[in-house]
Length: 214
Image (cartoon, rainbow, N blue to C red; front, side):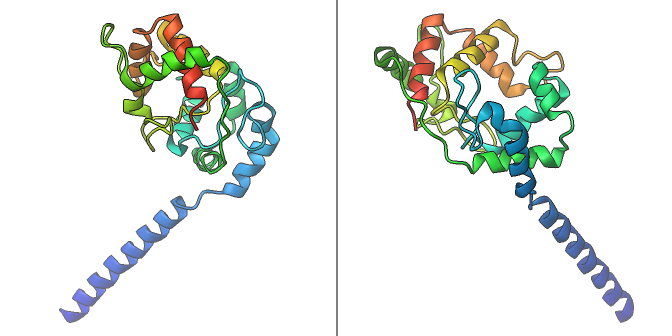
């Protein structure tokens, strides 16, 4: 009986050690490989440090890791429709995408800067308080007052290129993003509904303000 109990306890300990080892393996992304991928593939459009030199391409440095990983998965699965990005992620494994998300999140973001301060002041009011008349919620509620976002839930907006951010808001409003047939882009669907309440001027004001957050 004692031998059976010892054997049973030993089996539990072995299983626990195996689970711990598996968790440890999952918890250690290959950041060296991620850096190599960034240097060889991503840098051309997003910069070697994740700060894009081109306003039409997003800054990725300092972005929430989970958000970046999900977006890469969406590009690969066709949930987000972009021929260029689909080609870039075609050979990436789930582990690669997770490592890229973590690596880029660790890079230091740079403020894109405000180009139109008067418009940014309008955007500040909308970002912090929304627009009660149209039911537009405050951006700060989900993306945080400083634009840093909420880990694993909502992306960083602070320091993002205004040109890129404006294109995305327009895509959300037009149903070109966030309205996939399978309904898998849950947060994207929410953003589509939020963007539908924005006027073009409000979009322009919001992206100007967010670009200066740091």
